[in-house]
Amino acid sequence: MMMTETLTRENVKYIIARLIDNANDAAEEYKKDKSNKLLAGRKLAYYEMLDILRTELDVRDEDLEEFGLDIDLEKTYA
Image (tube, rainbow, N blue to C red; front, side, top):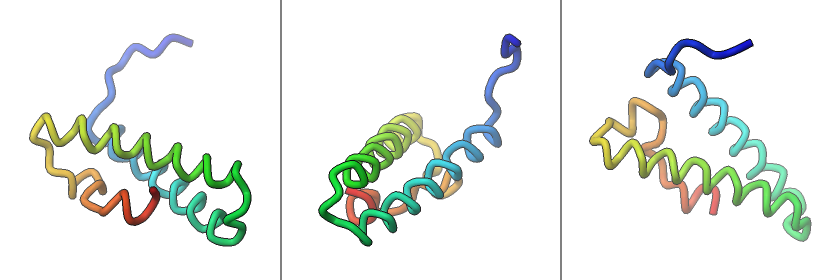
């Protein structure tokens, strides 16, 4: 099936919310076993994805709070 519609603001917000939920799960898993390199890499990957999205929205003068990205990503996930 070919995607024929463009992403709406609501679609982007939903995708970001799912990534944040997964990033939170990854951070919690890592806290339980900080010696696990796979968990550390997973947590870092979510940080990098969210950081890219935050940067792209910021340069377009979007309201980061509206997208749930008004958080300290470095403190939370890096």
